[in-house]
Length: 88
Image (tube, rainbow, N blue to C red; front, side, top):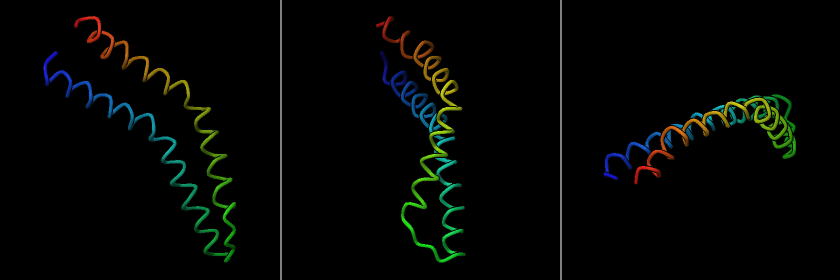
């Protein structure tokens, strides 16, 4: 296996990681901004107020996007990683 092939697989793996984590990170960012705005407007500084909605929304998004994540990882491994392992 050449150095270029390793770099290509690593680059593709990092891109898959970005694609898989993007929905969860986007929801955490949006929920954090909304809850932070709510806290700033109402002067309520409760630490659990930021944690509970973020975790709940992230669990919901994870449950919805689980099939996409599984399909992306399966496609990556069967299309990129397994041929490299089988070929040498």
